[in-house]
Length: 502
Picture (cartoon, rainbow, N blue to C red):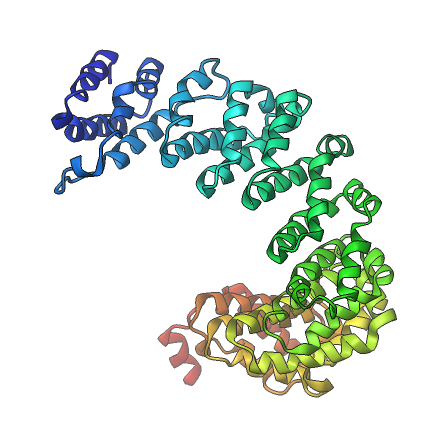
């Protein structure tokens, strides 16, 4: 595509009757030309004729048109933008028309082009320098737009590039303006502040006024807003300096107090799942702080697990899993809440029988996390987990109880169960329990009863763990290793069956 050809087509766009066919022609030529000359790209991106094609009233649009001008223009601009580089000095000028366009879809094209280029260059620590003040102003405006298609990419871009620009006065002024906006805009800003704060204590200090504003909203009457803020703030606690900030602001005490006074404010019950997620996420990193420091929160969790309330159970399952993500968490729960854990695991057994499939899978996933660790487990923790596993099904035939779920006709339930069994078999006691469950090995080794590909693979993973153990006799071990060597999807041929029959 030459610049002359491009100029000719742009002239054709000035004639309304020629617009659709000309736009289709331009798009077709662009698709055929992967490496565009920068002069062509620049000309198209800044061309008033391209954007004028979108200035069509609804009653002017042809009813029988084979293509929509918006789709055609979007495709043309998208292709041109994919050839841009953030290091171009004229980038703000080239994207200015798109970033200021009245149609959100066109503004979103430019934002997503910037985001994609940033993500492609994510290893470049100096990419923040490539964003000019003009582009930053466009991004900050997009952050305050009501449309998610604009606010979401703006949030992601600013998370990547804004840290190096926080000292600029117009940044703080824009933040203060955004704090007067809608709840959607404020929550985006809170999320941006948390994302930036995770980088360092120094950065947290620079955006501390935004976080203070977020914390002040925990006294808001809007329960949904409080839940959103809790979810945003929880990730701040992934860093030690974030926890220090939250402690200094007495956030844990404020939230814990809400739980204690929940009977006085019935609406606050709606906060319980959000509060549990908040404390659960923090406890996965700082188990001692939560388990020993906020007993009312832990009791609230067990009350939710015992309640059977399907609106609370998903958050409760996830929170218990978070509490047990570290070996320290397991030890502390057994030390301080042994009976509550026992009753909760007995409740799990009832839930696994009676809950809808989606919640059953959530419960299985929670149990799998509880019994899975990335690092070697101490003998003490292994003994605790053995005790906990024994609480399933009221302490009776717990592996048989799980085996019954393996025979479930629904693949998702079967896969979730096999994943849990695989987690239990990472311990000698798990393998021994499976070994002593009548018919379980035969079920695992039988290839003829499994049809779902993912279920076959889940079963294969369990057998691979068993094959690496020393718990079985030589003949069984050979069967397990043969299964592993043949792979998860091996199908026995008719010839093999005939030979075995003879």
